[in-house]
Image (cartoon, rainbow, N blue to C red; front, side, top):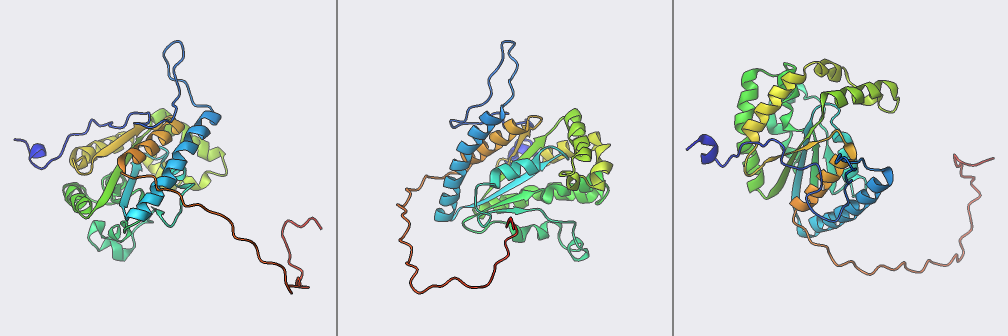
Length: 294
């Protein structure tokens, strides 16, 4: 029997998540007469996203009510759309429940620690959803490709990660790992767009430029990562992200289908009567409003 069968691992497909929602009632774009997929209109996308946001609020209420612990890992190439997907996931829920973790480069002290140690304090407690915008898999990707760790350190990480993730899952945490895959042509278009758009300049770092030329080094690192860490208890879910809207909806739908939750019965809410003015007299102090016309 092979090692992969003995330890419960399964080989990656590598793409498990179809580029369409796995369930639910969200409408996806259809096909034209030639059979090609049609693109989302802004109106269709916003309508589908609104439905998912309503469900995510229901999920949030259940997570808090039942004390669920959910950890979501987002990885992928530069420009694959991780940031936009995380924004779509979190823009209508509470940041106290859905916490986004994007760790900076490690300090000298952290470099001396066990590699995964600095990520562990951020794992969710009961009633929390923690989202890693890049995670411990930095060691399998950017650190390995850009020479910030040795090949031996990367290999040691790939051997250890499944065991650490099994401990995470055994502790009661629901662990979801997503890989966003973008084509080289679309990555080039998106990175060039950052040059021209002043709102996106912050997204472009010197590391992005250095790593851009190493497409196939990253491909090899990704393949090795899938091979070693795609397990039965913590599988990878990959999504083609050339179509950002379609990818976001697919991922949100998949999260909702992967985390068991129930819709709680809403409490009846009524605004209480507002108190009467009584003896209140408006202060003579002139508050300076920044949008005063005068």
